[in-house]
Image 1 (cartoon, rainbow, N blue to C red):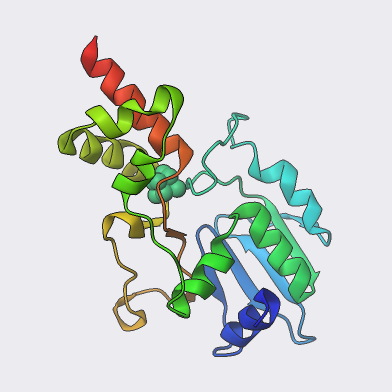
Image 2 (cartoon, protein in one colour; image 1 turned 60 degrees about the vertical axis):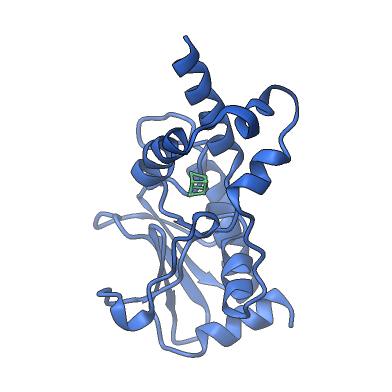
Length: 199
Ligand code: SF4
């Protein structure tokens, strides 16, 4: 099944709205969708073309670059309305790249999860040190400092699990943000941790 079909099927299981990360998806009476930031004030800027999001997702409220798209510092103040399903998927891929595909694969038991040891062993060049020298304690510290404090994703690569729906105390249906493999920023943070301890 294609992503759009599979996503539509999943959305058809409830009336929404659906919360994913810091954004809320709602279905309109004409079967289009709206997408907005959960921390919007009374009058967000209203758009219809999801391409506009590219400028919103790269910079936080302080005007600083956001390298980690799963970080909980997505800038509020916008709403997209009258989106087709394809436009909705496009918008979500701009905000949270691969999140929808990951969720659909997870739901179908076909999401590949890569243990950190495998990710570390694949590193080359200056990052090879991560496989050779990172201790378990350093790994936990980086997880706490990089993933735990900043990132909204669930670390499947390190055994975290998605809470079953009945255990979630959210009003909205929840689409989990999944992390099946440690990202490049995490690997870089591991290297920095090793180097800082060595000095
Ligand atoms: S490794 Fe950590 S920081 Fe990187 S995307 Fe996954 S959860 Fe987020």
